[in-house]
Image 1 (cartoon, one colour):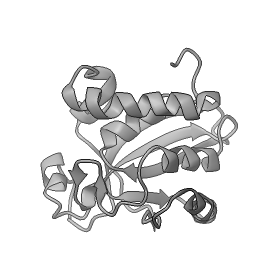
Image 2: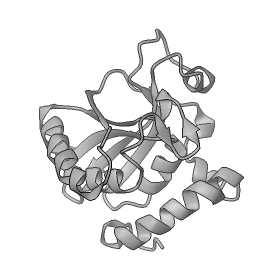
Image 3: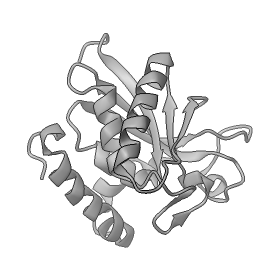
Image 4: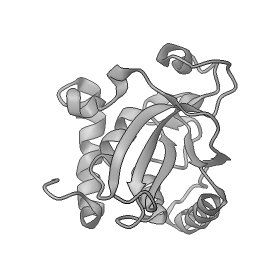
Length: 183
């Protein structure tokens, strides 16, 4: 991957374990960090603090991807299709501002592409999209035990009940965008 085509993207679509597991399957995504951003609390937040809902931070993933392999627009389309962008501060049973649907853009070009995708995707949903679009502030990497969570705990209850079905849907909808030997 050349440094010229190396780019970052940051998304929050509920629990970061789910979002991380999905994007680990996507061709062109080379690194993923689960973490927190979007809040106002001083200092590096902990998982417990973010879960309290008092920090204002969202659970997010930050991706490093090769724009020569997959475009930012394609990543956004996958993101918007693999969670419910019409529920405010909620994804399934996960409720709170930390689980909001959000796109944190890294530059003006990402903002413009995200605005286009949000407008295009609105035609696919019966309810209005509530996905927040905000500039990226400080990204805080989550604790080590949150990194690669699904890969390290595929038999855990939440993983089986929530993440595995999302991965099946991803394989059906986006098979052309997945890494070789996936699914």
